Image (cartoon, rainbow, N blue to C red; front, side, top):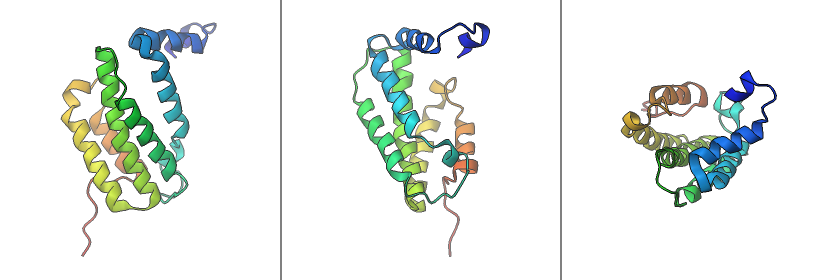
Length: 156
C-alpha cells in the first residue's frame, strides 16, 4: 500500500505479490489465499461495536476462521522470521476467532474463557512479536469495542 501512495501507477496486486513472495517464497500463494479468505469472513462492523453482540449469523463465519487457521497451523513452511511471525499470528487467530464465535452465538462464559486463552497467548509472546502486535491495544480494543471480556462481571 505504501508504494501506491508515492507512485499512483503502481499496480496493487503486483506489489502485493512481490511483497508476499519476498516474505514467504514458495508459500506466498497459500498465505495470500488464507489471509484473503479470513478477511472476507471477518465483519468489521461487529468488531467495532456496530450492532448487537448477539449475532448467531456471524458465529459460523468466525468458526470458519478458526478452522481455516487450524488448517494453516498444520502447513509446514520453510523456517524464517516471517514464517515464525505468521505461525504466531495464525495461533492467535484461532483463539480470537473462537472467542468471537462464542460471543456472537451468545455464550458469554465460553467467549470469556476463549478470550482469556487468547490474552494469555499474546501476553506470553509479547516481547518476541511486539513489532507486529500491540498486545495492550489489542486487548483494550477487543474489550471496549468487540465486547469480549477477559473476566465476566461478578454475579451473585
